[in-house]
Structures are given as C-alpha cells and as structure tokens.
Amino acid sequence: SYLRDVVKTDVAVAKTGVKFVHAAAHDNFDIGVYFEANGHGTILFGKKFYDMISDAESKLRGAAGGEDRGNVAWRRLRALPGLVNQAVGDALSDLLLVDAVLYLRGWTIEKWDGLYEDMPSKQQKVRVKDRSLIMTNDDETRALSPPHLQPALDAAMLSLARNESVSEGMNPPPRCFVRPSGTEDAVRIYAEASTQDDASSLAAEAAALVHQICGGVGDLPTSARSRL
Image 1 (cartoon, rainbow, N blue to C red):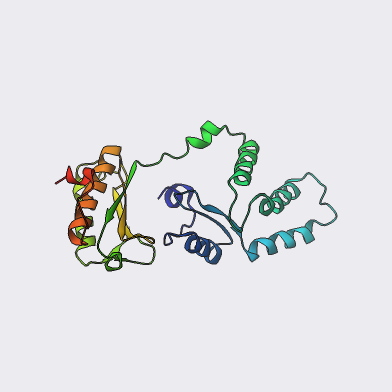
Image 2 (tube, rainbow, N blue to C red):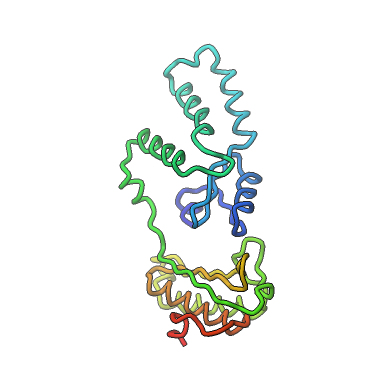
C-alpha cells in the first residue's frame, strides 16, 4: 500500500518464488523492481528503456560531453543497467546504486530509512497431512480451498480490525495470508498488524484455523494453542 498510495507507482503482486516475481517485473514494466522478503530481487530494464536511451543519444549527439541537465540526466540513466545484475541480482551493487542516489539527492541514510516504517509481522508454519488440499489464487493473497478457510481468515482479520483504529484511518488494516509450502506438507502463514502483539495474535489464530480446517498434523504451535 505504501508504494501505491504514497510513492504513486504501479505495483504487481506475484506468487512466491523468484521465477514468478522475475516474470511479473519483466512482463509488466519498462523498469521493473522485484523483491521477496527473503532478500531475493533485482531491477530489470525493458526494451522501451533501452530505446529511450538510444533515441536520446541521437538527439544529444555532439553535445554528449555537456553539463546541461539533459545530458547529465541521460548519462545517469545510461549508467543504471551497469550498476545492477539483472540476471540473478547482486546486493552489493544494488547498495552502491542506493548510495549514489542518496548522494545525488543529498540524503542521509537516516532520512532514507525514515521514509517508511515496516508493519509488525509474524510468520508461522503448520504441518498438514496433504498440502495439495490447500489452493490459493494466482498471487497467493486468497485461499480458494478448503472453501471454509478464507471466510474464517477474513473473520479473524475483521475481528482484530474492530479492536484497532482502522475505521478512523489511523492504522492500515491487519492482513493475513496462507499458502501451501513448496517443499513439505505444511502451510505457511504470514500476518501483519499495527502492533507486534496483534500480528502474533493474528498469526496464532490463523495457525489454529489452518490446523483445524486443513488437516493439521500433531500438536498446534505453542503460540496457536495459547489462543484456544
């Protein structure tokens, strides 16, 4: 919501996995920035970007060494693809790019860090008999099967929202997502809310619901048992 509402840029949500977020950035944007919570990500530059650089070079030819704003902007944009690894990403080169942008803007790291505050979040994992029974929509923001799971999660989020200041617009609404693991018979849960206690509480309630509705194996996680 920060990127959509504050930065005012287009945002695409993709299924978990580098190949999915890479494809979303490549197919939908002329300059695509993608990332996952585990740190994977990079910047992709599309054909339209390179065409723009080429067209600008033709118009500026003969004055490429000048210091007018057009030439300076063109040289900076032309250098961008050389500062990132578009194939697999490179955190160190990305950091140098960030440092260059901060220098050009005259910003400190503290000012940059202060632009955005992460919402408190909590992740959980619940083991199940058969993860194939849990199905989601394409971007994994809604559970489609079992049919009673998503309504139960919606009710949990709504109940928590009523206890927060969401209606007055003071806090973003709490959110919770579940998805089947790609490597084991388990369901992965992500929850966020305006406080860490509420995020943990929502994750615990979601874990209890998953365990009950999706055929949980063994005991509930300790945090989920405390909610029952």
